[in-house]
Amino acid sequence: MKKSIFIGIAFSMSSIAFAQKPISPAEFGESISVEDLYKHLSVLASDDYQGRETGQKGQKAAAIYIAKEFERLQLKPAGNDNFFQTFDLVKKTLAAKKLIVNQQVFNFGDDFFCAKNIGNVNFQSNEIVFAGYGIIDKIRNDFKTFNIEGKVVVILAGEPKNKKGLYLLSNSKEKSDWSNKNKKIAAIQKLKPKLILIVDAEYAKFAKSYKHQMETPSMQLEENYTKGPGDLSKEKVMQAFPVITINDNVARALLMPNNKNIDNLRKKYSKRRSIDPFVLKSTITANIDYLEEKTSTENVIGYIPGSEYPEEYVYITAHYDHIGVIDNEVYNGADDDGSGTVGVIEIAEAFALARAQGQGPKRSIVFMTVTGEEKGLLGSQYYTSNPSFEIKNSICDLNIDMIGRVDEAHKNDSNYIYVIGSDKISSDLHEINEKMNSAYTHMNLDYTFNSPSDPNRFYYRSDHYNFAKYNIPIIFYFNGVHDDYHKATDEISKINFPMLSNRTKLVFYTAWEIANRAEPLRKDKTNDFENNR
Ligand SMILES: [Zn+2]
View 1 (cartoon, rainbow, N blue to C red):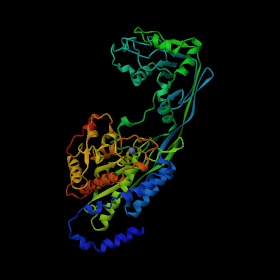
View 2 (view 1 turned 60 degrees about the horizontal axis):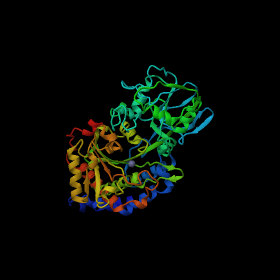
View 3 (view 1 turned 45 degrees about the vertical axis):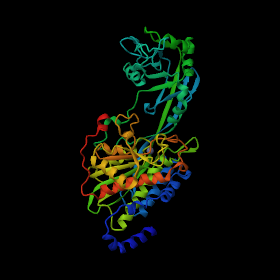
C-alpha cells in the first residue's frame, strides 16, 4: 500500500511535464519484468498453495494473494465481496464403490470403472444376460427378440473381427461405427436394461487413469445459477445411463457358474451370424454412491475505469486454479496457469503505473483471474452469466492460459506464441495484435491451432470461449502443451521467464491499443469456430 501511494504522489506532481510528450506504452510495458513475474510465481506455484484446486484451501489462499496485489495496484473491486465474485459449486465425491459377483468383491479402478454422471447405482440382481458384442444392426443383431428389460446386460467392447483381421461389419480393416461405445449404449438403452456391463479386454491399459479420474471430485455449477443466452443446452451435464466397464476378471466370475470362458466367447461371437444371448447363473451386487456437497469458490476481479469510455470493457483473463494434490504429490501448475495469472498481475501493474502518470486507459480494463477452469471452465461460465458489467458492453477478452514454456514443435525457435481465435469475430483485433507484436515484442505468431479443423480444439478449451459464445472478440494466448502438462513436474524451475515476460508484454500492448484507440473493435466476421461446434 505504501509503495503505490508514493508512486501516486510522485507522478501526479510531474504529470504536467509528461503531458506534452506523445504517449508511448513502452514506458509502462517495460515494467513487466522477469523479476516481478518470478516473485509472484514463486509464491503461487509453491507447495504452500497445494496446487490451487477449485474450492480448496490453496485456491482460496491464491485468491487472497491476487486480491492483495489488485488492492496494492489500487484497482477497483468488481466482485460481490470486494475483489471476490463468490459462488457455489456442487462437488461430487465417490463415497461407496463395490461390485460383488457371487461373493467375490471387485475393486473400483483395478477391476471396474464407471463415469461420474451415472449417479448412484445400488442393487442386487440375478437376472443377467450375456449378449455378445451388443450390436443391433440389420446385418447383425446380438439381441434378436430377447427381452432384456430390467436385466443386467453383459457385452464385449469393440466389434467382431474375423481370422484375417477384417472387421465383420465393414468387411474391411476399417472399423464400423459400432466400435463407438456410445452408439452401442444408445441402442441398447432403448431395450431398457437395468445396467450395462462392458467387458474391455484392454482394461489394464487404462486402469490407472480410470482410477484417478473417478477419485477426483467432479464439480458443477448449481442447477439454479443464472443462465445467460450463451449457455447452450449442449453443455448441460446430463444424467447418463448406468454403464460400468469391467475387466476380464469380473467377466470370468460372472461366467463361471455357466462354465463359459471369456476368450472362447470372444472367438465364438466373432462369426458373422448372430448368436442368441444367454442367461448367466450369477448374482451381482452393485454399490456405487456419490456424496454431493456444496463448495464455495471465487473469481478475483478488479478494474481500472476508462477515462473516456468507462462503459466499454476490455477483459484480461487467466485461470488461477489448478488440479491440486494427487497421491500426496502437489501439482503446482507453474505454467498451467500460474504463468497467465502472474501475467495478469503484471499487466494490471503496467496499466496502474500509466494511470498514476495521468495516462490511464480510455476504456475500462477488467483484470479477472478465474476459478474452476480445470473443472470445466466453470468460473468464466459463471462470470459471463452473472457479469459485474453488462456483457454486451464487453469489447474483447484477451485470455492467457500457459505462456511460460516452449513446446516440442518450437524447441529450436523459442521466440513464439500460439495465437488462437484473433480473427474469428473481429479483423481489427487480429490486426492490432499483429501490429503491436511488430512494434514491440517481435515474436513468431503461430496460427497452427487457429484452424477450426485442428483436432486439438483448443479454441473451446479455455476461458475465452465463454466470452466468444456471446460473440465477444477474443484472443487465446498459449505456448502449446509439453511433457509436464497436468503433471506434478509443471514446476517453476522449468519456466522460461524471458519468454513469459515478452508474451505478457504482447497482451499488454494489444490491450493498450484496444483500450485507447478512437473506435471500438469492429465485429465484421462470421465465426467459423461457432459454425463447427
Ligand atoms: Zn489451463
